[in-house]
Length: 534
Ligand SMILES: [Zn+2]
Image (tube, rainbow, N blue to C red; front, side, top):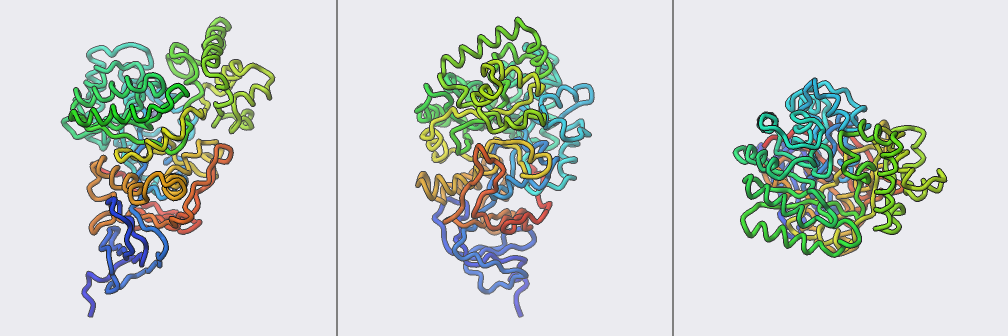
């Protein structure tokens, strides 16, 4: 008679286990029972309710996307297709200063407006951070979620969208809101120091908020104040917040943007390593692409973005202001010849402008027979400033350096999407569907940029440790059974800038908390994800 411990729910037999530790892969069986990894090794003595032959396939811990904007897209479509199809089983949300909660009734319109078109796609039925997490949880997401509260959201509530320092009581209010959000489940605070209103914070404000987190084990996630010419200063500011606020720092989507900053990846890493040597716990994430994605409005000068989208649209209807903005845009293009060929419209809200999705500003200018500078302002006006833009700003060697370096994790910087329904109307950056598979295909197998076991560790154990998820990140007995089974010989991203809604190839099975969510080409509909707790 068998010992009851030898009965398990699932056996992945004979796969190449890449367990997240960073150790070389080994052929082994993985047994799962009650949503957890039961054992790893030669498990021929076990009897399983289901056996999956995994010979020739890699079996790895589910990937953790360190940086997403899935806060609302998970409510629109909780199946998280673009994420789960890559083997992403946990998504960090609330990034770049922007979380949809808290959203007290008297500030709801303002906070909703910060989300542009995606803010229109859901009903905002929550006010507190806890209520938002309840709504998300009740939708039954297919991935786990690590929630973070946005500094921009807190500032919008306490100060509004104006460019000014908070009054004493306003700063105290932001601190209270942060404290509450953390008690309700936030893992930390994110800033987006190029976006209104997060950008109006002085370093001292961020330190004052970090101090609140320090007592509670929170992490400071930051989209730093500059990713081009001022990158090193911006990193220094983030490090200062960590040092003086007493918190770990996660640098979001680290990059060297703009031709004259190419080749500075080593300098950026040296800055981070120097900070670590001096006692500040700094890490970073990046996505494996040489183009970024942001709002088209980010092309405008900072003064023209003050007050948010309504104010932007109003300004664009004023002839004199338009002239000033046009001059600024023209100058920026003179400084970077060919700029409008390297800026591509990724998403619009209106049907009328949908044909421009996937086209460069130069192409749209040709189609409209108008200078690109005018087209930018026209589109912003027509789309109520809610236009997505891709920019080919980075050098692939810098991207490789960031992807390969051991301190770095992977963050898609995307909202999870789907090729159908409302989300399918958008034209996202290919990183949405491809980031993790691209690391495994293009970087590990084809490019030999880093070994498979290192890549898996950077996408599982490292982020789990960073986030304090002690029961995830590796395939070891007792860990939650977040598991991805993929073919290391064929795994590859397929999404492109022209055709972004393509699932990767080579990902065979994805389990979340022991439940099968991706079965070959199919999403099982499994609502296996959880809102994770610190
Ligand atoms: Zn960002």
